[in-house]
Length: 284
Image (cartoon, rainbow, N blue to C red; front, side, top):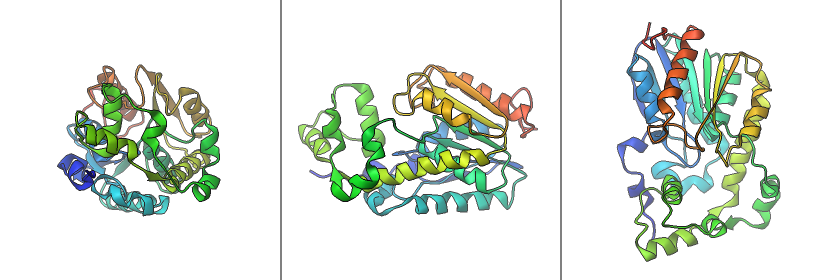
């Protein structure tokens, strides 16, 4: 049995979307291996306050995930550039919000274009592991590997199921054949080298960020560790607000008990920097 990726990510929530609002707009950039679905809760919070929200699907994700090995960071940059141009043409204020790897792409985009604010969720820029530093070499020596065999996943663990679902879409974990196929699922090392390049680009461009920036980090995040995010924000040149919350790498959404507090802080941040939200969180 083979995974049918086109069906796994066929839902409307995984597709690019633009919800029209008024003068202010937010570009929302998802992470790896996500889709715009992960940005929906943030999009809803902003849109109900009058904002236009745009969340593009990065090439190689969602129903295009089978083509991920041939997509590159250049494809991702072109996609977010195009989405930003469309918003800039018709809106007064623009903010960019990025999640994980989307945070790295957001920093790079903000460094090269005139925007008004930046919101970063667990912004990825580095993994503290020797294999990560060896990726430029490994992609030539070991072109593919089986990631789930490395981690020996416990398929009965809800957190493991949630993590695999984010990468492979909806699968039946009770089916032995499905579990076998998950373990045999292979990816090209070049995919992770593209992610490495995105992280390094975001880190390098951070020194060119002068707009107000809100950074939100989960204290229990084992992928993007708090110590690395604290290091990243020291490079930002504009006003920075840093918020650490109880949570892991997936911060956006009602599954996280502190999500209402995160939304409240985002609205306060936008108000403080005169980005179209008043003190009650309503669009001006």
